[in-house]
Image 1 (cartoon, rainbow, N blue to C red):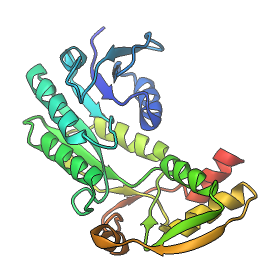
Image 2: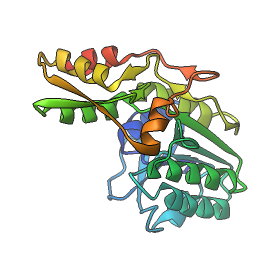
Image 3: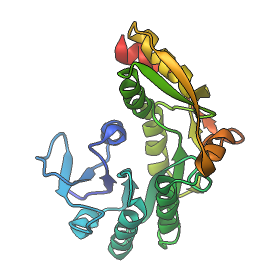
Length: 253
């Protein structure tokens, strides 16, 4: 069976939504994973490591489209460069990449690596599409869960987010993957901007808990960037529908 779409990061939060949607669309899917897995429901798994440049040639062999979801706390630029080199040699016809809002403005290593990855895709010679999205509700939940275990919750002033539902991002990515290469497309953000204290309080209310909140100031360039809203997107952005409250009600009951 010819593999038409390779998905990196197909076993993660986003990939867990994307892969079934591609299968429902009748597409054959291959997933690149660092851990071996048996084929299931028409999905083939190939073992490899983007950052170590291992197993990529076999993964891209025969793929018409590459949907690049894999990412980590560092090294995304290098991992993506390894992927696009192999994809170019394999004759891939469309590269789709998920990035993050603020990749070109936030003075943090994670964002700089995302920008480097965007440039690697754009400079690859492969027709491409890149979508920047806000932080997922799932990630915010992980953060506030950890914060909620503290007797006093630190709340940096000016730290705001537009959390978006990962399923809405997945649906948009599948739409882009099955469409024509579009270059940079409008950002995808959640419907509401929240301060860190609001997100923490929402979580604590949903769990029937309360904590003292301790305001604090973020120093330096990072603090100034967050206070300026460099990680937010408004004009021209696509806005999701599911709010943080909707997500918490579903996830925590």
